[in-house]
Length: 514
Image (cartoon, rainbow, N blue to C red):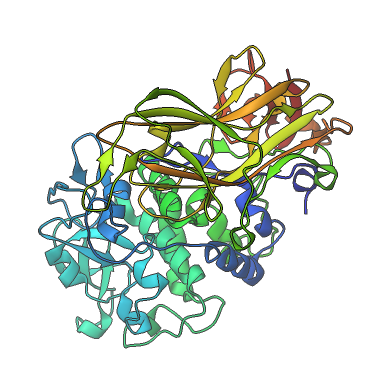
């Protein structure tokens, strides 16, 4: 493992929202460092298949976690509400969120018949699913993707036909996307052949493109062609944003989108070279940062309200303050932890209340600490955008407050508990502070917010500020790039407080600004 990853313990923070800011969290890719070929492909497989949460296949209401609910986020042009259709030029418009669009199907880029049609994760995976105009979906059938020379049918975007020298029989047919989408589909095929490399491929079409086994899974003619397409059609903002938004819903990423050259390390010209997630070319602007200074094992727990459902929990000395509204929504539940509920009444007669209240921790003494951070998990339900009505604040003794950046918010549509990520408190080290969980609701929207597993940790030892890979002298003259620990790029470090990561080429340093 290279020195960057030995020196900085990176925090996996999935800061995603409807039009997610472009950011690659480097911690997500630590397990790929130094690998290539079959080993790298196996590591990617493990990575993208761990802790995933697929949406339910099909359509549903605005609050249902269905495929079409997902498409509303991943494949909608927010400027005109039109569907982004990669298979045709016909114009379709989204209606009610979660409902299917007339004239369109849910299309499996990797046809479901290739694994027998079982409704497994591949069947529901948004990296394999996209909205498609019905006619071209039917024409495409279960053919593999490839270069079409003799066209059988076309809608002037997608072509169906055969390769040069092949007969026009259905057994030989391929489908070919438009040039502007070739790279997108190539990277999706790389992902599918990696995520589901353990499948037994069936039918008459799958063996034309796939081989049984973890490696290489995709046949050589396919990897050669798709790598060519991926190089010609580079990752676009649309594709990067889709990757971020799918992660927000499913919990995993398509690494072949984040790292445009990754396929070369798996199947191509770099198959004997170790892949380095830090220095390899990335498709997006932002990179993730670290949280711990020095040795993470030396971190101390400053405060813990760690909630264990099986054994009940503790209130942890927290108190709540009502600022305005008709009621205080905060209460403690031994089964679920602290929760704010802005609605009352039975399910058939719910009444939403206007609430404005904060859950406060006890005073946290950060005196003597050189770095500090907070972690917790949370659940949000009955609200489409939890961050619009919920926030985490830090309060100083003089009663001034400042909102903190929360890397990950729940979807707001189910009871799934998600980690909020690691929030940096280093700028307030040396002070006594409180954390506040600020909740608001209205008579129209009254979500539920649950907080558990709240832990504040700190580090008192040597600051651990060091230069990483400082032997790269050639990078000294490279322009500096500045990042916060949660992956946000700064135009300038002026006025910034906290852990700052500075990158010059492949040289990375970190420093603490107060």
